[in-house]
Image 1 (cartoon, rainbow, N blue to C red):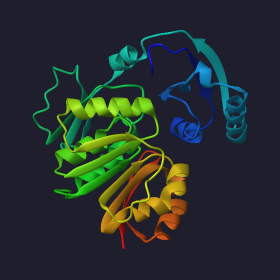
Image 2 (tube, rainbow, N blue to C red; image 1 turned 45 degrees about the vertical axis):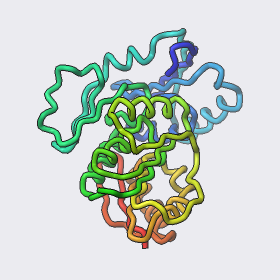
Image 3 (cartoon, one colour; image 1 turned 90 degrees about the horizontal axis):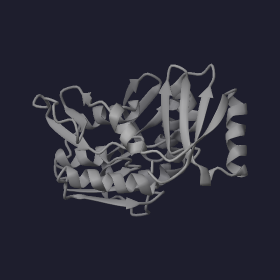
Length: 279
């Protein structure tokens, strides 16, 4: 979140699990989500909250019986507050994701170390889907491979791909704040093979990637399934997440109808990550 903007704070409560609430709301243009014992908190810049968006939020909340209250929040240093609560994230002994101010962390036991400047965006590694994507990536040999990271967020997956030996990585996101943060993290990790761009769709280049990663949400995955498939070489891998368990059959059916075969599923709490191979 920007230091200069005024925000509206939404506090959501319901009978649903917090992860489910976040999934329901993920298609709306909130800048960030926080979950706690009382429910889900989300923020949106005041200048984005118009009558049209208010109606969309109301429609989602009515559909899923979610209650909410709002509060105007004055200018605060959001990133400083986020940093103060950011904890390192480890994925087995494979890699650790830590902030640039975690100087006292012993990371000697980890094969890969990723240092990031945390901001209030998805992809910091705390979110279950990022963890699951890294679990899948751990199993692949991507030495000298060409990689596409669609919805890169903070750039963690792209950075890990370079550290694992990928020769060329394109990382895109539709959020300019995420793009700026990803570029900063790429530089801070001394990566030289990653290009970060702002984009909200998969380009129409056909059959050029050995690995495509998309940690986004169900609706975008379904919208981009054909382009994601066409971007892969035969025998290339597609890893996707941002998927709730109850959506697995729908996702698998759509992707397997686009020249992809499901190879593996991993789960954490309510979330899934899937690995497909192109044929």
